Length: 329
Image: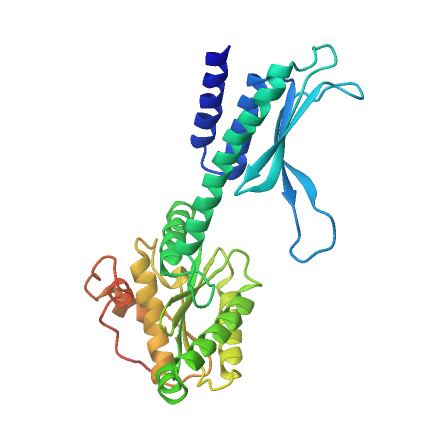
């Protein structure tokens, strides 16, 4: 019996480790816990507590498996799931009305299974926090360059497979060096944080759009399967919002869409270069509105040599910039 219990614990741990998402891992773990305890139904619930709320916490079912037991008081086992020393949730295993009650040995074994589940959930929380830190800009709270790379790679798959439209807005905050030199880097950082808020608010009407800080004074907005005209309107809101910020000299915004590219786009570098071409024109003209890349920009960008892979942003987007041309494309 002890060996069977040991293998049951190993089975629960393996089942959770094989899954990638929290909900999937919870379902795999609770199903194995149900079988280990001979239950007809089992559920893992998590405590939900609203920060600063006076409303008592409530349990929300994260995953459940099996058939719900009939009857008012079926045999049940409940074991708390403790993560980082706090009560994270609970494991509940129920037997059918015709099944025997849980033995004292089974009641003693349930907390061991709950502890294995807790270890799995703690690992997922650590991984989620690592991912958050890896994909978030520490200053502004926006996505960072790494997050943009991942999102763009996924978006390009959709573009190549089904023609999904990608639209990219590249923004450079004007005058940041002057603010840093005149008022100090702390004031410059506050300007960047306020601009990040402007960019986030402008992105809200675009479902799934990613607002990011690429580094320094450089930001971007990536929209997938959104109407390019809607993205252009969002970019115009960014320009207006940036101009209204204290100590701001506005922002230069370039907009590029796969609609300006003949055929299917194969590389995210090309889209960044195209948006850069438009952004360069906006900066050169001191434009207070976004500049949209056109077919002429694409022809010049396509003629540039390939950019070096990876690393620093300007290497990613290409060190050469097309010369400014008249008009806004």
